[in-house]
Image (cartoon, rainbow, N blue to C red; front, top):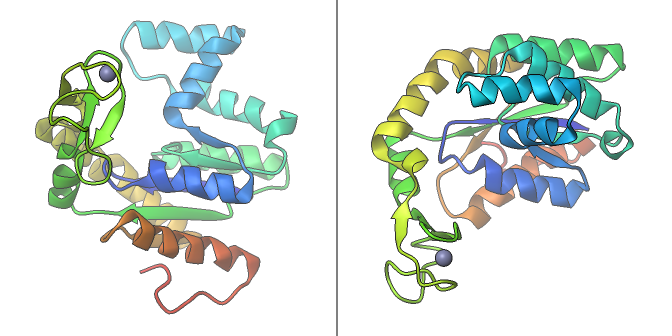
Length: 226
Ligand SMILES: [Zn+2]
């Protein structure tokens, strides 16, 4: 089963992606994992990716896709994969389809975690991490015992640079420009399921489960995918 997770920052696709993966016994691979694994592999492909990363430029789609292709041929990915944050553009999605088609496979579902920018900004402002050890807290769901202080090491807690409003805005601009067309791409193939991300993690989790159960041909509950 090949599941693709799409969503703007703060939409919760990482959290829910890991839950889907655990439930379905599938590996969960984020775009960051893809690059780390490629570099860590020490293969020529990994070394190529590393050079781009060191230069601070985006790793070209071709290299990312070659790496995905390599992964899909490894035994641990035989049952499928939950891809989180990759593909994120139409050319990447087309490239993925080509790779899968060669193996008589295809993307089974693209789950679109839909969130308004203002809601994402509010949500991400509650995610803080320790500036010393990196432990992540959520001021609503998992607050530190002492406000502003890390439970583990006593370090100072702060909102990550990636989660600050200006950065979140920039990521939304990129999302609207490059990723929205990909959402249409999957919609036109009849593979897109939009997930309403309002409410608690448990509430959203129920919608996600319902959406995934559709793959088994089960009837979704009325509250299914938004
Ligand atoms: Zn700490």
